[in-house]
Length: 545
Image 1 (cartoon, rainbow, N blue to C red):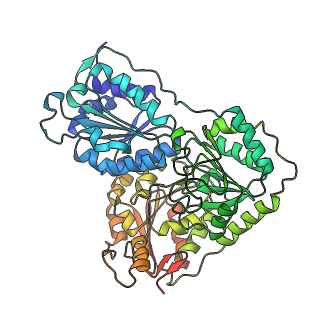
Image 2: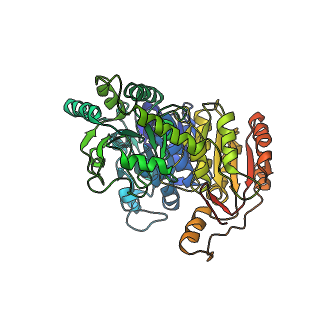
Image 3: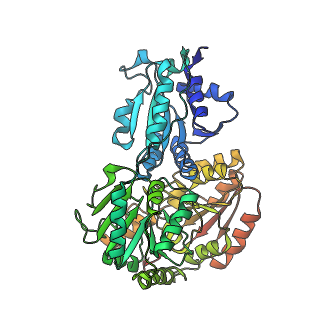
């Protein structure tokens, strides 16, 4: 039976187990919207701007392990979505962006909102293509799911011309695409065992794609069997329980100096799943390039990532799961010589995070984050975007379970609010708290409308210091006293949130935070708490004093 192109697209989504899509409607893909009308198994969440929709799709993929789906129109719609596509690219998140396109007969005329999808998205995506035949839609959709998930996951963009979607074809949807995963060479695993037995100061950096709760449990068992200290890559702090006696802290922005020294002085660093990028390596300073002075073992599902900057002594092209399968056969020493080293790494982490640092002003953000870590349940999901406010969160919060941290390793502002939307839709029974700075929130503040329309009981914490704090910090470091372009005249965030139908209140003293959070947690609806902080408090380690 002949089906419309729009129906073939939706059939492919259903075949691949998609239950949630995000987008902003456009006339360029009306047949897809029409087919979704008769697909009750797929929930369509309409965002207020395509950048928010793409970030929601990214967060959904992070939480579920399945590709996030984003629907956008051509031209400005696709351009807006680019911000979220960049997040997915740098975060190794599987995502499929389905972009409406002008009719084939109008191509190359600079028709209304026409764009060249390949030129527009370039190397920011794993694959960009335009489907020019209705009957080939199942083929392209199947490949999109495969490419987005295989190797190092990432975004794929398909342009769908109007007449291809409205046309019909007598064909069927391809079966569910299976991601292709790499497996380690047995000789490499044997060599890793020999390296571990020869080490005195080993350390693991865990992160990257391809994890799930079961793999985290298996990784914890592996680390315990070998008594290894474990650090987590930038914004991958939920890959190992932060309350564990072998946790060494996060290798990211604002790294504990003691952890940075430990990585530099380690004689065997095992990077498991993580890219050794800018933030995780403190601006590429924790290792020498191209040959690290530490013995480096790098395990990553994408072969091209191995030796991308740092040449490992042992490169292993493997998914996290495949590596753990193979590593279970290694025999660990009964009394490892590095047991004291591991205990010291954990002691250094606790000394760095147990108590909040003193800050100017009447509100101490570190103490507020410590209240969250001591009062939120283990399964609470915390989301955030970019800004110095996040440094307090990363330093003082302790993630106890996998997928309780949803944040962009790309450092994108505006991510926290749309990510919280996706998190609450995916996990409606879990508390979801979005953290944002005043500048960060205003990048996507319109998504409060999505929160209200979807009736999502999230909590938004907006840290208001009336400036772009991160840029101001760098400004003061390099051009002290010469303020330029970093001050903000903000709206009344409480009034704005109430205008969207949220409960809202403002706190300016640390003692006011706990009661405000308790009221928000007890509410059935969404809440926003504006936290007014002293602009002199730039970060947990820097002030303007």
